[in-house]
Image 1 (cartoon, rainbow, N blue to C red):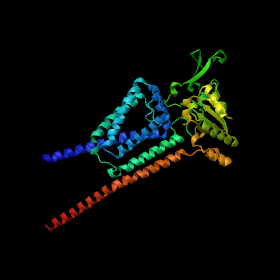
Image 2: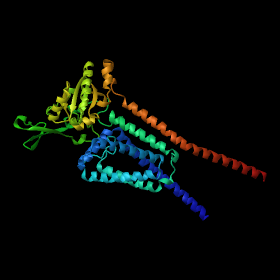
Image 3: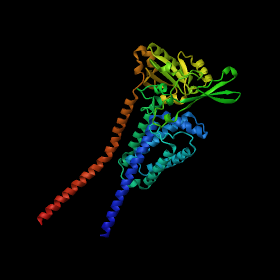
Image 4: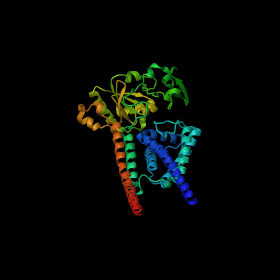
Length: 450
């Protein structure tokens, strides 16, 4: 009797431990999948956040190294999430996840205390958490992962060890493909304010002065810097003052995460003094060339830009450039590229929000965004060869359709190791049930014979 009670108690404990383990697997796996996936969707956004981190730490790092780190982070988080939910690598996966989350815990504690960046970027632009909320989220995840380090092997795996390599390869290919498309073209899902089909310039910018961003203009003379407001009289360069930069000050209700429309894209003249947004983009068909980092643009791209301008002219489409840079950098760019299109200045943050890439191109029709693309993704050779047969609307690919195709293909492919893993279990269950049925029939016949 005591043995029976002990066995029943052990069985209940195993059920409780297995249930908690599966619950923690699903929660942590889902968080890792979402975090890795949204970063892979928009690797440019993750790259910008990495640059903020390194700048705050005073650690300049090569662009290529940061980009490799972004791709690696996206893949690691997404694959940990997939392995958690499917139960793959039951021993090693929680250990790797624990090392990762403890590192993130220390980093997010530093961010929460010293506030070097506005948000950690854990979920990209999909979900924006405060720095302290991010830290406590990681505390909870750390507790769950510690449990999984201890008990994960006591719960069954959905994909058997013989086929875990398939889950590894499929997850890596999927998340890497999404990252490459997001970097070389545009994010396959746009979480930013300037979505395809929506307006480039919000009417609120014109109708409600309370929703507009404020700007401060920084000038320098004899090593002394002064800031001037929009309504202030700006100093003359003839008196020795030199324009340095324009600082955007966003109102509290349009700050990131406030829930309000945070769009702040404006166009200024080359000196950064006069706002000419309305006359530049309000009406008609327009190709908008966006360059958030002028010194970072290769001179080899100038022929593609000029070829794109010639093609746009033949299609009754205007073309302008919005760049972020000092007047000296703009002048140097003009000398280098000899543009026939008008060049205006804008804030680099606003440019990066509109479209990813350096340079990027946005096609606008009557202030409505039709498509976005990096310049590198546009087939300029096709434009040159087919000329008038290529319409502006068809120049960029449908990123949403590409993402759906990738997701469906990934799910179908993941069903293969899942099915192969379940077949032996289904067969064993069927065999056991059949054997029990035979035993029951045999016992029944014995009882009848008695």
